[in-house]
Image (tube, rainbow, N blue to C red; front, side):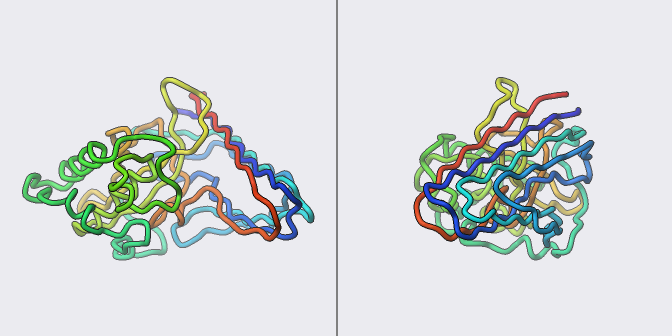
Length: 267
């Protein structure tokens, strides 16, 4: 399947910014199951300083703000060829060893709520992939999809307490629980072509666990499936913070407003 993606991120600042830097993880990965046909990024109000691959092999673009900038606009446009591999990415590659993905983070620490969700899964399911699908189903039953109840800083434990969350929260809970059972697991940010709309106001997130003899396998808790040809992987990390599409810092007074417009459709 060939997917066409348009992604515009706009920051408006109440007062001119004296200095700012942003890291952009907005260039999809070319590897098993997907290939970039073409990808273009344009920046208004800032200057591209450098590009590099981080320790997760994410392509990172570093941009600086123009002097006294009052807005930053990042516009991406491209096409990606995808294949349906039933969520199987395959063998591990990259600079970080597999044991690194068993590490917990502030957002994915397994406390009593996570351990309760994972309890009994090994006994109920002899095989790894059915066990991880069962975990995915448990999470969605416990934490219903609802926008506006959590934030980017909400941890897996906190999301379970709320009982509501979005794809980012579902992924963090999955990571915490899977790691507590001994699986290497990582966060994925990217795009999903939806059946009922073209325009979206946020990118998508899901999780991957490494299964012995199979490799990395994706699990989209929010949609109860493993990623198929409608999904485009952009960045991976231990949690959202390492795979965030945009992150950075700025010096200046006043607040800011963020708007995102994403379009994903079959070409």
